[in-house]
Picture (spheres, rainbow, N blue to C red):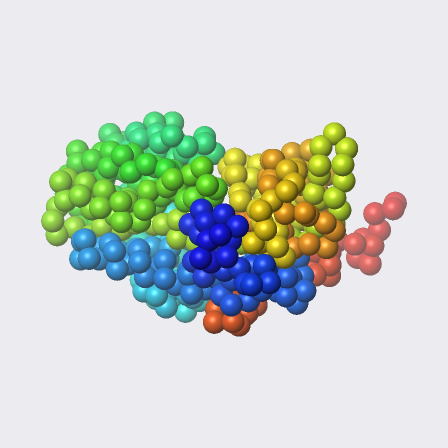
Length: 432
């Protein structure tokens, strides 16, 4: 048994840094027992190891700065767009990367310095650009001519921008999370980017500070990142190079993601070879920043034996859509008996009305039964982001745990809030 109490010592690199199993076999995170948390806040429940999250942010910031002093780490907030996460990132000295008006509003509401906010997206609206400019954010990432046309009509003072390029690097990741290949919808091929930059040289307000690129997500090797950095050399010298994020994480014992040190060594060495020594290097970690610190807790609604053993929980596609979209293979555990070796192989399924609502195929569980708390590890990235109301499910609460205390970060959606946007019979008669 592992020192932290898990029945499998390999789980120590998958579950949150401050997760442990007590003598009673119960899983805790940040000093808070999971079954007690679910009793207090309900299920499904997103649970965050706040101290682990902060430590990961510090490791990123300190590690990059030590290797390249003129650098910046920006939290790719689409991975976990929770106000508390923005505030924690800002308090740890990170910049904030946003990809829409809602994320921008969360970043501003968190108290972050607008100068440390970057806006990108391949189809920005006029309203988003107005909000960004009026808020005085630090940089807008230009994705193409449409952004330039809108900014040209909008700006009355200088605005720093980065031009997003397509580096032509297609990492070995699922198509849904690959963004750097030649047919990517994001950014411009290098010849087009070069022409646009030349066109903007004389613009009175659009100030091209540098380049932006991103190759994809859940990348489990460092070589593609090195190629992406090398791709910018033919565009000339700039003050800023934002090379995106994408470092993968360990979702199960089969994964062997590069360590943070290996990743930072590779990208800074590539930057040293290619980029001007005085330029600023920016990276945008999302998944690798927040995934491990988060878990999702469920209550078992039933266990049945038919063509297979099915363990059905009170969540599913509504709170873990990325299982279907991104082929995630999560690690489950019975939080009530986390020190016990599994004796059951089951299909861990959700309650949404789709056969594809399969949280874990061939899940190994310790004597699962109705009422148990089952946890999926490393769900801190994109679980909350993609939560929805499938079959009328309510969006879950989010709770941060640290030093034995839990703090509610997002309230569970109520049925009144679920019904609120709908125009009902008190306003319009739909029976006629």
